[in-house]
Length: 469
Image (cartoon, rainbow, N blue to C red; front, side, top):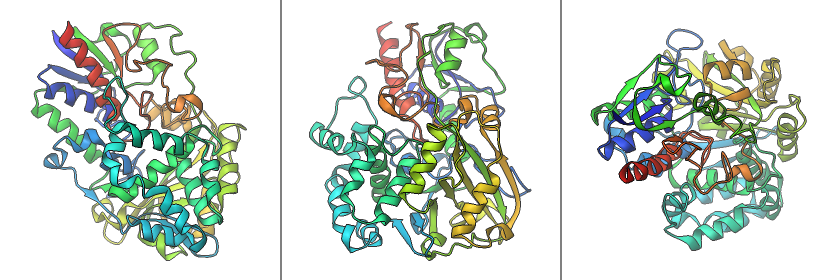
């Protein structure tokens, strides 16, 4: 009998399996797709030689993850590549605000009236970032806070809506960039704890940047999988699990799945009936015959580029997708250009480009034209660079990854109390009605992102049970 079976070979499932195997437990992973990876995959979606990331592409939370940093992933092929700028936010006048590794450079891009306010916002937390991120991404039931005073101060700053936090800025440049940071989790700007979301992304950039993985996000998953095999763990692909009886006997079962799928497989009925899924995304992967022709020079050297003319436009787009059940006319966009630091991703002189906008859950329309009209505002002539495109709306994303219910790439709405208390109001969020069944997906704290911390935290709950039995 195995000690633990993990269902789902995404970053959280693989991390949970690695953490258990490192402690001497026998582990097997079962994955429905023909490769490991979940939200961290790389595939030729357009033309031969163009390697795209179907979901996550830039990894500010990955390089800052306490779980990943404790593992020898570089030994197994993971190499972080850093663009000159982690992120840029261009404006229609050809200028841009930037999120740089340097606090001073970032503050200067906002203009003199907001430079001091930004420094006062982030500088108190940066010296204690490693402790803060560990505390923020863990729970008291899995790890007691190492610095409760700093964590409490962070909570006082970040728990109010982001609109409250950005009220300290006087000009639109800082407000717009920060609104875009909140938009990465598809949350309305006025939502609870959205200030913390923006602040975490900003601090992550200053601490270690927003890198891409050489060769694509698949490198993260492959490193985890290879390390797991070296530890004696097994991985079975092309193995769809429809009920617990499909799995071999084990002392514990750990699910890197949506709560909905887990309830169906384990027979939990309506146990997760109140769990909410969020807005979906419409994503386009581009093969380009050269770099994106950004008007703003800063955007040409940034790994990630946010697209939204101002904070009002961004807020309107987020509300449309998440509350008004309509696709925005001017979508807020997140784009990533891996080829500026990784020439292995496309043939010589060509580039891959990654872009998405937010749409209602389950939306079946085509947002391609709206996305490209937005891009043309900030990169005139963009369409002339397109060699091929691969589009994926909510139905296609959900078919590609069953955790993306309705196209929600966060596996659950990051809004209201669910931003912190997921998948249920519980002091043991990784546990389920069955004492031997656990959940470790992005539906559990600390939530979405390729960081493995949900798997790491769930593994702690699992090995405590295994040692007791």
